[in-house]
Amino acid sequence: AQSVTQLGSHVSVSEGALVLLRCNYSSSVPPYLFWYVQYPNQGLQLLLKYTTGATLVKGINGFEAEFKKSETSFHLTKPSAHMSDAAEYFCAVRPGRAGGGNKLTFGTGTQLKVEL
Amino acid sequence: EAQVTQNPRYLITVTGKKLTVTCSQNMNHEYMSWYRQDPGLGLRQIYYSMNVEVTDKGDVPEGYKVSRKEKRNFPLILESPSPNQTSLYFCASSFRGESEAFFGQGTRLTVV
Image 1 (cartoon, rainbow over the protein chains, first blue to last red):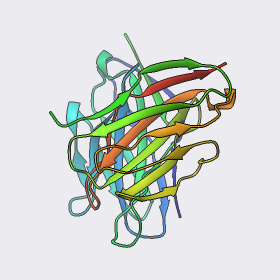
Image 2 (image 1 turned 180 degrees about the vertical axis):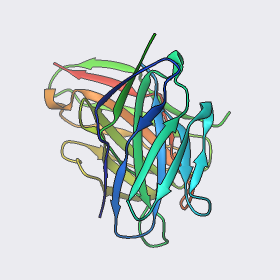
Image 3 (image 1 turned 180 degrees about the horizontal axis):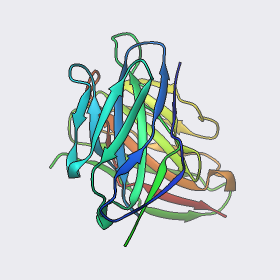
């Protein structure tokens, strides 16, 4: 079984400030972890993913996330927020081992607001 | 261009009138799935398919049907829609393993 918890359904930051969106997961097998972004009236777009190897992964639009196994976390960060970052962000987990299934389980999402 | 295409994008229907939402992908992906998105609940999986003629229930399958007769297509069928199926629906596809899921643009369904 697997699950994802995103702390904070709404996060507000000032333009130029650090963005930190929190994600904790549980998984009975080593996980694959994903962050997706959803802009209004659009589908989900992949920001970044962790599968194996380096635990700090970089994605599009200046975002990055660090896989911390000991904390079961995969928090998303960006050093300096831009107005165009305003969107909803979803963390997701999938079993990372053959035979573990292919199901992608999502968190409930975090709405990011960027203020001038 | 690699993509997942859903139709229609918007649909308003009445209770009990059967409807189908189509989903097609051009990436030769084995794995396809349907999700519904509701405020505060994130995306919940309705049904998924590991390959042609192989489908299984997700977390919220009640009131829905699917079929996978061809690798590229995975339609979602609501035999008798009810107002509690008013939602935003997404189709997604992927390879197995490390590949991420690719999503369609979504279908906003309203059942009155």
